[in-house]
Length: 217
Image (tube, rainbow, N blue to C red; front, side, top):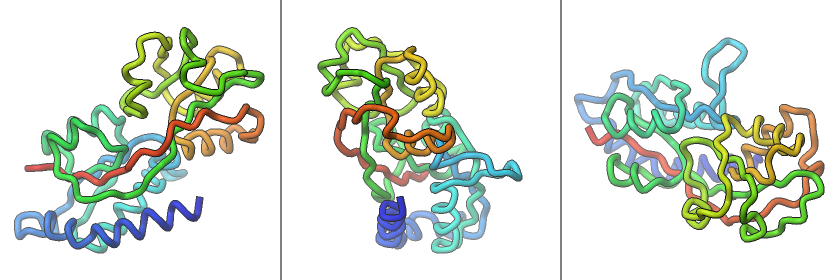
């Protein structure tokens, strides 16, 4: 985990000059702005004091220091974050690359690349996306993880509220697969006190880019 954290911060250093140019106009610099933090651990979650914490919260704190803009982190579901940044009711967000945000918001830069996987229940023989035809696969509302999976009409897709619930349902045999970011599942497994080796090797769907967007207004 330390390695990809270092990658994130290196990427931010490269993007910081463009970010500062975008966000430090006289009308913006020194003002408090809302940063929508997606409410999925380890990227965004409530701390013991009730305030947002997590990887993306830390990133926005660092960006505040780099740009002179005071960001107020706010935990937000992905669909609402997309709407708010597109409409200007929030100033910035970080999430997996999305066509709708690319069209409606301003991309500052790439933050990291994350691996997309399908985790499987114990004993599953599945080894590819094709093996899940007609099977029930849990996904989170909001993210778009994989183009082939998103277009597939044979896989039975079930909306789930969190990676924690995805793993719980896999363990109980209520799902035959769960799609998501590898780090999301590793964090959920740690929260549950179980080992990732309790599950079969996941189906690797490659990597997706995480980007930083700011509102166009």
